[in-house]
Image 1 (tube, rainbow, N blue to C red):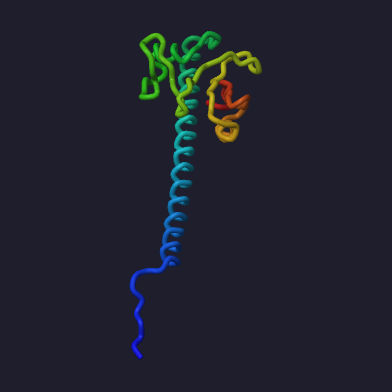
Image 2: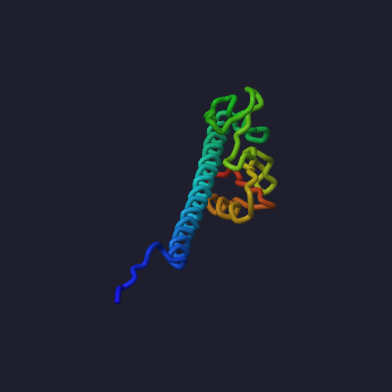
Length: 151
């Protein structure tokens, strides 16, 4: 009696191969989005740090930060113009990785100024706030006071 040889592949083999490919794609997609989120957080941390350093430098020359804005820091060249700065001269804005402006606002808790930035969700806000002392989150907005602790 002759032995029959299988020709082609079975449905089970096709499904198994597709499921392995799907698992690999899911893992790669999750890694990509996680890396993107971490990159944005690092960029936002760097922006906040740059604004803090610029404000500290500005304060040493002017002794008062009450009317300080990001535009002032850019005009007086305390803050570098990077690809994240948009707008015409005199009305420039520093834009966060989430396409929202980074602003200096009045800080009621310390009678000074604070850096404010709108982020996409509370988790991102909490992760970003953990990098700065005195930072707080309020409705997806992180507020970081300009203080010596954060400089």
